[in-house]
Length: 165
Image (cartoon, rainbow, N blue to C red; front, side, top):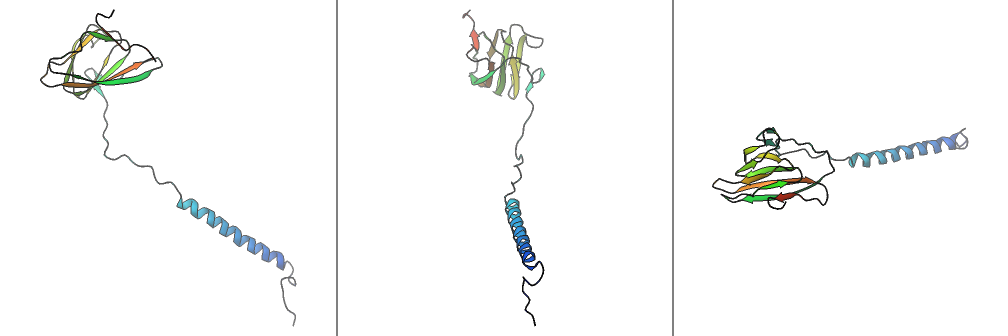
């Protein structure tokens, strides 16, 4: 009886090598896929417990268009009961959001709906037109607090007080 070995079967050595190569290729492929599946990114966090609303002015929705390169800066302002800012004008567009109390703005001109006295309650916003003289006051019993944002160009003056002409 003749012993059968790989060399006595035509193509035996190459078949064994091809089989081993196929097994290695499959194991390699499985090894590459499994870690990729395990490292799949987690889903992005979803919003939870967040409320947002559109800013509202005494004239309706809050929107102002500017057409210059801008720098955004701001400050919080508090006016005591009976206090006022004094006659002033901002040299750049400004945006106010009232945090507490009722802010009274008395403007000396400006577009329709801006001139004269306006009342801005907590939660409302307002835009002081650039170059319009105005006075913010607080005739109420508690403090008025508001956020004042300036849209300006770098290095420019923001506000001019009356008498600084």
